[in-house]
Image (cartoon, rainbow, N blue to C red; front, side, top):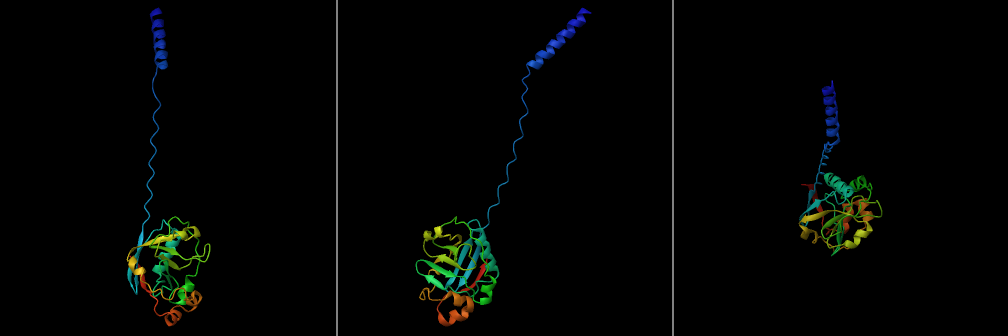
Length: 208
């Protein structure tokens, strides 16, 4: 019986020895799955055919998403067809966006919220005109010089002229600020054609 007891005791001692000296490490945690990259924001180009020639703007929704969407909706609806550049101030801006037909102006007289200004009003950028906070509707201006002073006033560019910028600098500016915006709103081109016949205009604007 002694040899059996000796073997059992020896086996037990070996078991505890191995258990005490185990160097097994915990299994590594599985690597975290990589997050999918966000899809890049797609720019959109819009061609303006005007009485002075053509120019193309590139819309950047990431600059001002609310303004960019409103602009594209207006273009797709034909809002700017035959609209005049009624406020052209040399070395400053070329403004447009009161429709040729008063009914179209009324249709889109719905205000949108402001976008944060994340892009400066650089030469060639397009920005919505506004009458105060959250008052943008359809009027736009092209910066025909660098107008960073407008950034702090809440004017958020959403697009930039990428072709034909020289065209925008040729729009007729002889009337200054004489065209009455209230009368344009009420009478459209019937008023402008009779009182300010030399104003340049948009033949059509189309998404490319």
